[in-house]
Length: 198
Length: 78
Image 1 (cartoon, rainbow over the protein chains, first blue to last red):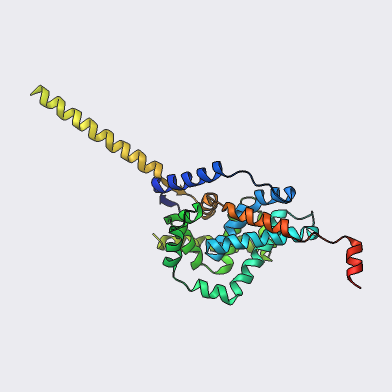
Image 2: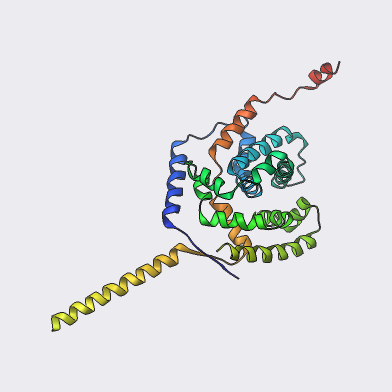
């Protein structure tokens, strides 16, 4: 099965323009801890993507990414070098997202209408929010929302090319074989729901 | 008569050229994904982490209390 998407060229240009403006005008950040700054630069994007798609809210994802890295900074002395730092960061992020999902506040936010989220996002000149209003991002989000939580997490981890099946298994507390089986079903379920969003 | 037919041929050529151009444009604007992971990887690649997150994190790190050295921890217990 193939996915075919029409990409609106105007939207892409708009995003590229905004990103370009931000990258050319902003001076490089001087990190209080250059070593940790390098870790952030390397791993912030996949962590932010996971939190964004898990929490459905760009502002919540920004806060979560900040909190995950701050927690990692404070717990750097407990990090054992035998494990992959990205896997360790994912573990913190997954726990953080689960805690947020359990809280009353988030249950309240999740019941809000999708259209409200979109309207709010569209008014702000942030490349992410511009992107979030686009068809593809919204269709993927709607599809992921329709999946059982376990499938959603497995697919989001699979989206990171740097994670092996063994690492995904360790992060989700199951065997590699179980992960393979569940991913097979998760892909099929995703395809069915994605078709419905056309 | 000859002039008319050459005009017609020219218009037809123009029409087919613009049609081809449109088709090529549509091809360029459409994207195909062979798997769910490919689609999600494309989605993840398009996402930009807002620069404000790094700035806020850097401030939080700068404002974090420095870890106590062993003798500070020892005396704070008393």
